[in-house]
Length: 552
Image 1: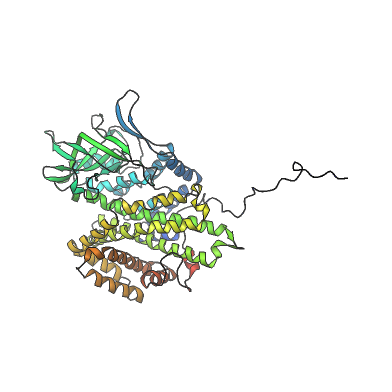
Image 2 (image 1 turned 180 degrees about the vertical axis):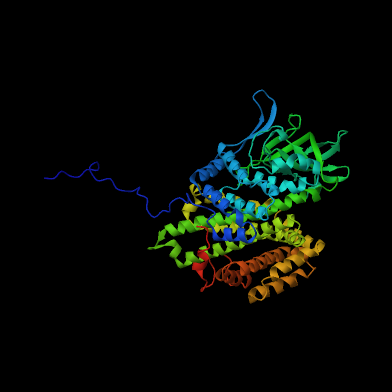
């Protein structure tokens, strides 16, 4: 007689065998991306493609992705005093953050483009910046500000002569030391204050000139990121009005400048990057540019950081798309891979279309910046208007695109381990920093009124595709009518800047993208043959052609 089976003697049920889950998206070349590489070549930096692949393999590697996770889980910590009670005002970062910084600065993503005489240097840097964004966005704040400070600092040649060689280097050297004793410097900016925010002319920080030619600042800034950077451009009220000043954390004699960090911001995302409220009290500073022309001086820096906001948002959309497509290519539902399911193909193709339009516009702006800095007046005029347009629209599209991509992963995407929640928390940031949506919409109106040559440059860019697609031609006629109406301009500003972005993107895609991509964009974004959410492209859209343009 067989003994009865007991619970102890039964075979163990296999409940933890993992099936139907995608492998981690690691060990790949993030730069193996037709849209990115075509744009970089088209805008004049084809010579940089091999380096982009090197950096792309780094960004797609397991170690770098682990650094990105650690830098956000182990957030910066403020140390106001040392153990003996001395005021130090330092922020401590996890080693992973320093590893990310070292890689990005070493790749030339900070100020190196300004020291590179090759045409396309700023485009090369833009391509790398987009790859770094796909890896981790927070550490790129000090990288971006360092890049952007150079043209503003050049308004004071003596200061530029001292600091520019160190700002344009490729050495990351953290820690507060005498600036000229370091091999590389990082820069930041202090503009907004709690009583004014965007209205910087309401600033109350004061500046008093000294007999030795320096100035002394007193005031409190509201949102100054990367407080461990070496140098800052700061706005303060001088007798002649709002002026721009250079504030080093460490003075030339090696002593600490007064830079009291009152607290670090507890932000929605961007957790690896420290954002602070510094207080100035008899803080030593040097005037940059003309006294009383502070906004005009620092706007040179703001323009370049706005470009990085567009690049960063385009890179963030592309990173989210890559995760969604990777998941869909490995996950089966109802007997078929997700990527082969008709409705999911519509969603992914629509996201791919959005991403290609964003990346193409972002790289076009980088090309314009490169040529403008080399003396091309037409490109400078185009950049003036198109940066405001691109900053408004591409940054607006990032949150909705990332949310849709996260949904493609379902519950897996809602889990922190997937990395998608971090992409989602980062998504609203670029729309806020360096001027929110309203600021950029109004900036577009200001450019149209004060710099009519910028509208002419935009017209030339859009009409380069005239006669190729009737839907694009019709949308441009409607936009011209909107631009010619002065009444209710502010009320209509968001409608106009949105339409301008779509028409500009349409022109770029008609000229540079495969026919299937341009056709789908003109049908959905310009002719309105789509719904309000992603995944509503019309039947007959060549989904396969759009999915071939995804980054994985």
